Length: 90
Image (cartoon, rainbow, N blue to C red; front, side, top):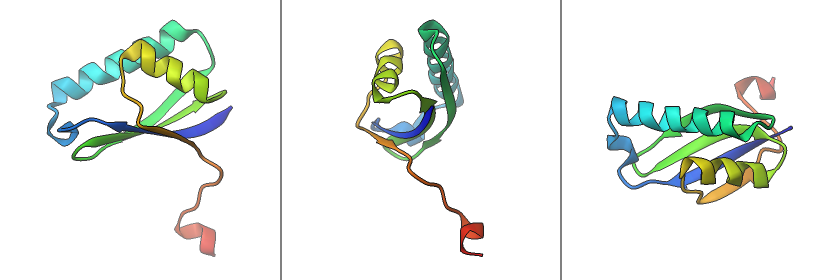
């Protein structure tokens, strides 16, 4: 399984209500369950006009399948090659 960062262009994302974010979450979880494939949504970061999602899947095609099932936009998909944080430099 590989880790991916998905960029989703969504104008006004930062102004979505708690209820709207809950609905997006429920839709995403339903899509994962419907797929019946190894797939894991790790977390998402909401900014003013985009949502950046971290997902674990076999490949990019499975990411696109999830997006299609949930009706989510996909601006870009990037496979994570390495992770670093402040402890990396020690």
